[in-house]
Amino acid sequence: MEPFSLVEMQQATRNRGMPLEGLRYDITPSGIHYLLVHFDIPTVDESTWRVEVTGEVQRELSLSLKDLRKRPARTLPVTLECAGNGRSRMPHRVESQPWLLEAIGTAEWTGTPLAGVLEDAGVKPDAAELVFTGADRGVQGGIEQDYQRSLTVEDAMRPEVLLAWAMNGRALEPQHGAPLRLLVPGWYGMTSVKWLGRIEAVTEPFAGYQQADAYRIQKSEEDLGERVTRIRVRALMVPPGIPEFPSGHRFVEAGAVPLTGRAWCGTAPVEHVEMGVDDRWEAAELGPELGPFAWRSWSWTWQAEPGNYTLCCRATDADGNQQPLEPFWNVQGMANNYVQTVPVTVR
Ligand SMILES: Nc1nc2c(c(=O)[nH]1)N[C@H]1C(S)=C(S)[C@@H](COP(=O)(O)O)O[C@H]1N2
Ligand SMILES: [Mo]
Image (cartoon, rainbow, N blue to C red; front, top):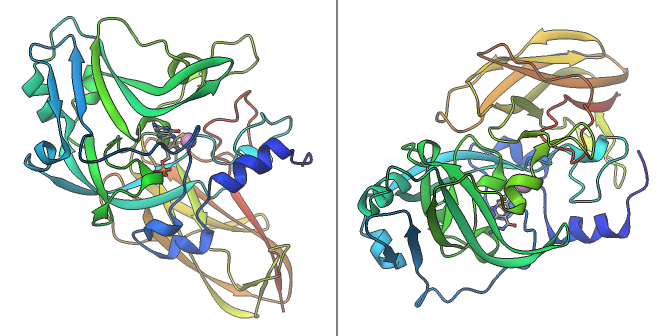
């Protein structure tokens, strides 16, 4: 792995990954859910804050948090993953948030379905997309911008897409988008715009920086690349035994070693998970489903004999997509769902 730069360190200390032992919880405690903020966390005054619904709509709306809370509410367990998860193990990586594998978390998000708000506003038939604008502003790629992302009208109208004001039963904390964020289950995290202040219906596909330039799987700098959308299938394990500080190398006792983890996918249900010890793969057992947009637990027992081993886990979705064994390179280090490897010493 190439050395990490000061710029990467600066991002790594501002943002935060979920320690992988957090995979033990069905619902990630808010304090260890991963965090990714591009610019500064804006301070938003909840008492005067409103979300504006504008553009190609029959009736423009300006809604306070109180207005939104009067609407029908839904609570959904949703697994969020950053599209840059796994970026650090790629050769010639882009200078960005240097995730290893921990840009993940599952929270219970409460909000009102966006579809109902859009129905009230009456999105005009010539609208192609909705543009979501956050209250945070910065410069990226030389362009000064508000953080903005779009969805097609069809994707925005899906019943699971929420305007969320609570996480794990409590009001959103500043870093997770207080007082309101968009939540798009099944999609990589960049879609779920935090500190949401404006929703604009537009007639042309949105070409802002975070849509047209960032979040693309580019084979070269010149390649426009494919858009990053839904989460690719992935499994992670709780590293077993005890770690050495600071290397993190694992030590376990010989005998029956219970291994557990989670698997998720935003394009189809997880079909199966396998555990690999060195190069031998065996099927793990899937646990109960938490919901259609949340990770699923799995378990497997390893009969461990003294020695050094590499443990791996690999998930396959119902469409037959399987995680690759090696990271695949792309300019921005996006959607890299290669298998986790955990070196272990059995004593
Ligand atoms: N306004 C705004 N929304 C944002 C971001 C941001 O920087 N600004 N980061 C996005 C990215 S890249 C991710 S992965 C998720 C992370 O959500 P979390 O920090 O609540 O886990 O928020 C998304 N929403
Ligand atoms: Mo992200």
